[in-house]
Image (cartoon, rainbow, N blue to C red; front, side, top):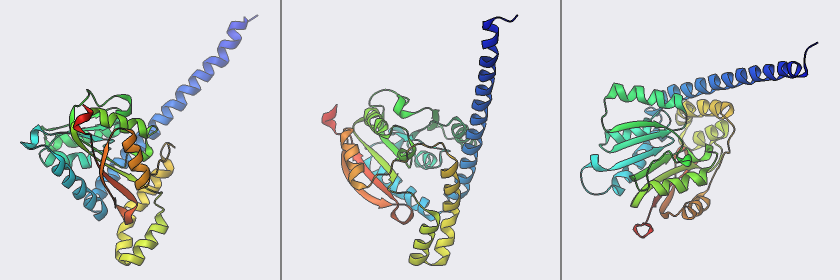
Length: 264
């Protein structure tokens, strides 16, 4: 006659096996989505005008806030860097740059591209800034975060950590959506403003983004307008230097902020 222990071990073992299978499937799906996102992002980054405009705005502010001296001595952290497209822009401008990303598959893609470009002033790390992955206090002259806050499980913690790793007097550039970008409503808005050609070009980003929004892990989203964004940054210790609408049809807010010297 089987013992009670043997009877209970059978279902428990089956549950353990099923749990392992589910986790493996989730890992595989997450990796597939991450790689797909990286490939699509690479394909549209240089072709999509709103990305190019945003890239120019961010780089201009990084150059404006950088300390005087050689750019290789200016240390920049790109938080939630994804496959590294913005990170490469910063490194190719001469800054010593680290891209930090929580999704390991995207870090692998970024590292492969870095090896191909042979940029000695660029590195990629796997980790979450909100969990302390940014390193020591006051490690960076600049912190950049582009469209990463709204899908982070703890965006306010991330802002506090961004303040912590900044040097006193250091600057930060944050960009976050103010609302969900509906593909067809945005298409109609752009068509009305810029004509059919501009609206068709917008589909290059709108369609893939909508697919990834449906498929990604459901966190948030955390949409902030100018006032909410400024209040959250002030609560984290930052001084807000300016805000402005940016990206696709003004769907995002760009904030220029500083960690004051007296905070040291």
